Length: 231
Image 1 (spheres, helix red, strand yellow):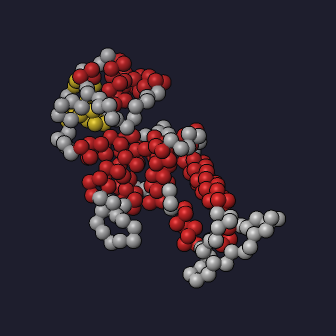
Image 2 (cartoon, rainbow, N blue to C red; image 1 turned 90 degrees about the vertical axis):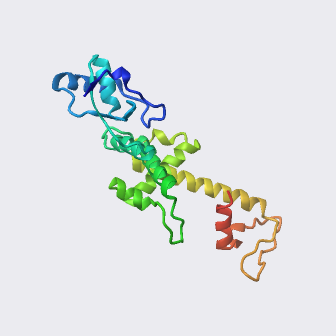
Image 3 (cartoon, one colour; image 1 turned 30 degrees about the vertical axis):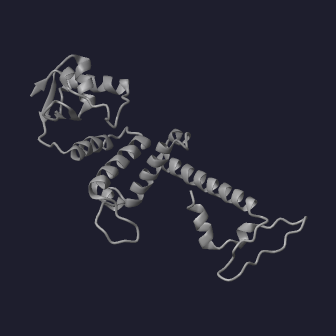
């Protein structure tokens, strides 16, 4: 089946919105020389599911695009097909890959619910996403953490990191430093107050003009964890 590429509908919520023109030119030249090797996939109303780059290349050449129609109507499955195609691309940046993996994970969590920590329940887990994408759970967790950090807008330098491991190291060190600074601020505010050290004691040394009490030494482990989770 052939179709004028201008009739293909491209929804605004596609995962990939930026296309490298040099790569499109290369793909167009390949299609002109060898033909279109694989058809694009459309829904019954001609909305693109898989193959937007081929649509753009054929439009650039002014030739019809080879297509096939899927009978799948479930939105989550259609979205997953789109995202998985993008993940197979070797030129996909680590942050675009992170966003795609997070979107796939969230699609399943919204459909099946999330498995809660410490409880035996049905639902979708990071391990399930890893199985779905043939990827280790720890790697999926890394991608999910990075995608969430990017979306938060708190780490503008993150997307400038060239590699996944470099980005993850930067994020962990930055978060650790932020936690240390928060604890330092908290301790500074509490230097003149009695701080609970155990179940039955209030052992805070008497502070003199020449002494600064390190309140961190007198906080119970549980209370420190409470502070870290406060925000």
